[in-house]
Length: 110
Image 1 (cartoon, rainbow, N blue to C red):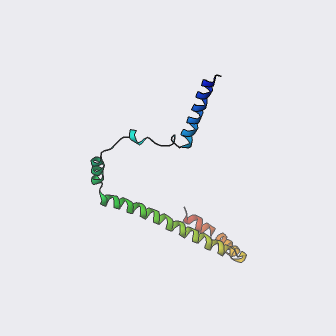
Image 2: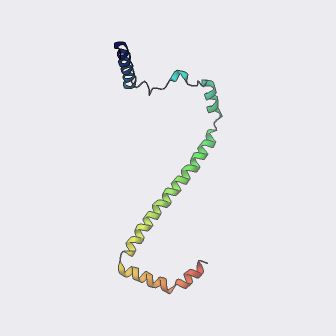
Image 3: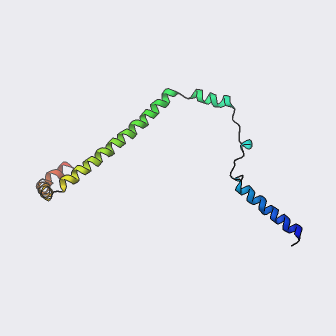
């Protein structure tokens, strides 16, 4: 390789390394992006029905709150049931009651 070719190769390597180190390959080109007129965006915002938006947010909030409440209550019930069933005598008593009334429970579920 000639000294000229070697110099071109080194210059290209340095240019690529500098480009990567400066972060230029990550930087978006803002000049080439689509420019949306401000009036158009303002018009879109004017078309938004804030009352309808609030109602939809309220519906989603109610659903989320209801789900969290049910999950919390289920966790509390599970804890209570575990605590009740942790005593062997209680477990055995509940099993005996369940066996005695199994037919009535099964018929009620049909």
